[in-house]
Length: 446
Ligand code: IFM
Image (cartoon, helix red, strand yellow):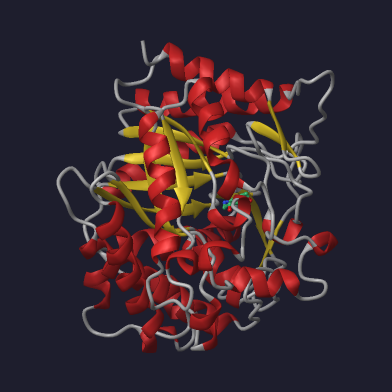
């Protein structure tokens, strides 16, 4: 398999999942500090207080990434580090990312910076959080501050990572911070996250600068061929995929979702959809697994899938082989997803901004033979290659994740890393999958 010249070969992380040092450098609390500290929210009572201690160990981590042969690092900036109260800039907080970016550049690694990967400053949550429209404006200010500080060296800017999760898991099902459980509110939060993306995109301009956002896609596969199956898949696809993709592409919110979404339209003001449709240079496609959906006999029956607007369908258990998280492995779906987005967007450049799998990994004699993950990457890279062969403009592939890390509500129980982390000692062990991905990257960079 050969990939186009200039293809980005990277690994991704997110601030709260890896940094630790939650009280250092003047960092303020985020919604995830609050949520993880509350009883029963995160498996085993785990928190991101220390995580991978990336805040102190980033030179080692970047060194490992560069030595593998990867040429890009996708990381996120912690808003509460840069603005402890969500509004006031902290020089010490910015200085950390200054050091991180310099370290990347000194190792020949391209920084790909995400501004929001779910760690909202707690002070802004107290002021209303994402259900409040003002949070989108605060985000635009924050984006401008980070851009002014790092824009001389960072060219790749991603505004928001997975607004679906931030909105629907954070304010709907409540399994993520801040733990809200109201689906109507979650839809409003989703709109404000998209608005935040559009407002910030305006601030992220500069010579050679590229703007993007990263959406998580769960393609719906109907578990049958009847019209009712097709309708169930359409419904699932509407809220999970099109609700986020379409407004970003300038197509507005999908009418079928809005029609089923109660009073959602009331939060969308004149001009909002134009703001959300701000031009982007590429779209980050986060893909892990499809969803197998089936209709229920009673169209009003509540779905087992905790999403608003979904009634009358069930999401079926995934067929094996599964990852440790219980997720289906379907590389072919990645090809069809990339092809679908490309066609829907008129050929927008795409970057696979997250793809990966958790498995049970063991360090044996100083090595981790994670054959299942090697296979996972091999098959998904083949899927990307197939999409390229079909004419899709794919510009890069980022493994999730560089390091085993804090997997949100699952704590430290799901290992996704190319690099194993012993959370007792903070010892890093490169996995076979990391070496594999690095070999493919190197072979394509000759
Ligand atoms: O760990 C997460 C990441 O933060 C967002 N995308 C999915 C990953 C695996 O669940």
